[in-house]
Image (cartoon, rainbow, N blue to C red; front, side, top):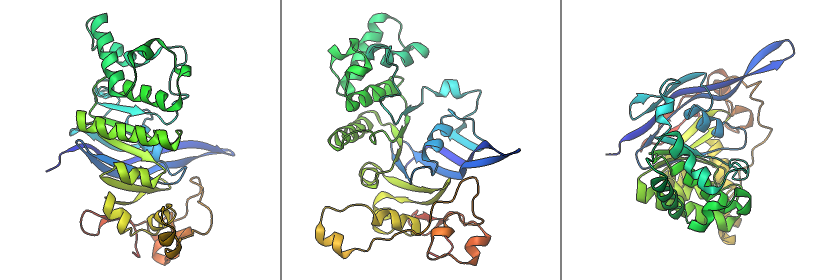
Length: 318
């Protein structure tokens, strides 16, 4: 039996936006719930602006949540105890060019979490731990004295991963960690994530655009649309039997390296534009672009319901 490590309950993140003389809430994350088991990878996908990154940052309390709960090992994460939980939960940021301090050497970047949490009793122990972490992510010892600008994008991302691993976390939010990298480098970094998971038993929330990458690395996948999760299922199940119309459209756009299969399958094109988060449609947010929309979709927002085999979908008509 798998054991739940992180549980998110009805998480909401609203940002106040001034419009004329009044302030209205931008609902970046609106009532999101999911779990991540120990040692598993949950993929989180959706188009730009759907709230994926905000979920990850709010989960780690880089943003103060508007409402909802985040539980780690059964204990609620709050403003009071987040400092002690930072050792358990870390983040790998999307842009390796802006997430590393250009004035610090690689040794200082990776060693900073060790200093903050006072994990090393001597300079020798600190140095050995930094070299061990660099070895984990495929960096050489001679790289320790260099600065971030002297490295390629893939190497910089490895530095960021080593920094996240420094405090021996059990859970890492990976915020589009390969989107800024070349395809050949993406494969190396993805394989490294998998190797580290096997060695260290760390769990990931893997946020990405690329459905092929997410399917490869994830055990389960959650699909987001305008601040809400519309479907969650095992990776293979979601890939082979998508139920929500939005998930079907996303998967129909994934390129397949087989011209016969590509010609035979039908691309599902969505009509209309994504609604503004400041002026959301009533009921289901996806109904304005959905070919199956009914009056019920406009009247009430569907909740996630289990369709069997732990496949959850938020849709009235599918």
